[in-house]
Length: 199
Ligand code: GRF
Image (tube, rainbow, N blue to C red; front, top):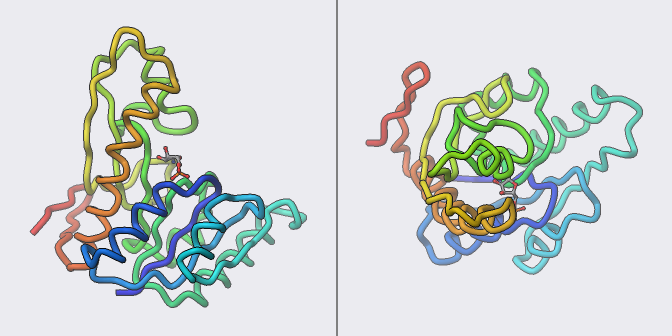
């Protein structure tokens, strides 16, 4: 399978996918990185892995519609079977979601449907929950609402703050995301409504 990655920042989840492909754990080639942020460290990771990078700099567009048109063009050019959102920090418009329906995955640092949106780890700490974790889900038109593929949990400890919880969750993200991508690439995901069965 051909996969492409969308990332806006540090790219540690992107790196986990790169490494799993290099280790032949995922039967795929990563055909490139698309980013909205010219300063993203993810760009360095793509370059180090010899992958093409497309920067669609959000700040250079006069409207969200114009940005999304350019993003859609870039995504089409990838000719990818799967788009992996690995810390891509914008909500995709309905045009893109519709065109790649069932072929986009996102990683979120909470056990959805709890704590969707930004600062999920802070939301978890402040709410007083005793477990949190991460979720890999297919992307639909909502924010962090699509069918759930994989979840992994971690304890929330009494002395945690946003940062210590985020670090603990990140370790699980780096397992969950490559695993979910692997399942997709092996054609092992069967989606019925909101439910994803793993074959
Ligand atoms: C991760 O916690 C991811 O779940 C969230 O943003 C963070 C990105 O980290 N959406 P990285 O860029 O993969 O290192």
